[in-house]
Image (cartoon, rainbow, N blue to C red; front, side, top):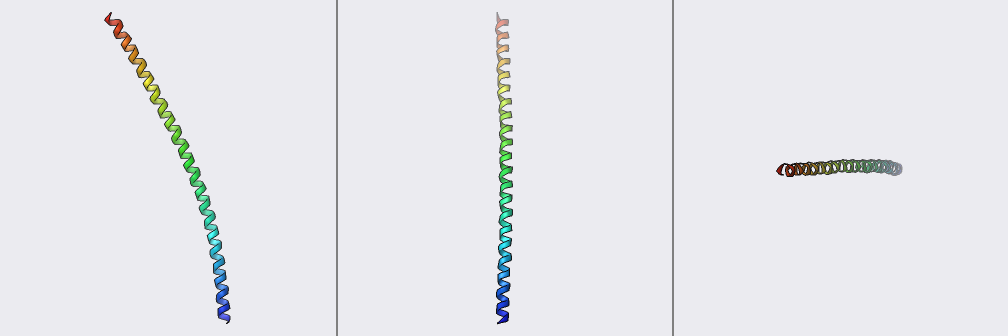
Length: 81
């Protein structure tokens, strides 16, 4: 009978330790998930900023190309006269 009671006590202790470990793991997983969400949000912001800068450079390049084209066209017309 003592062995049975000792077994039950050991089982209860094992269950308590397992539950405590599961709780700690859940907290760690939640913390890692929050860190991952924060990292992804930061990366998205950086990507959006880089994309905006790239688009700004493209627009500026197009505008400069258009201006140069107009100047060359005007010079060509002036030389033709």
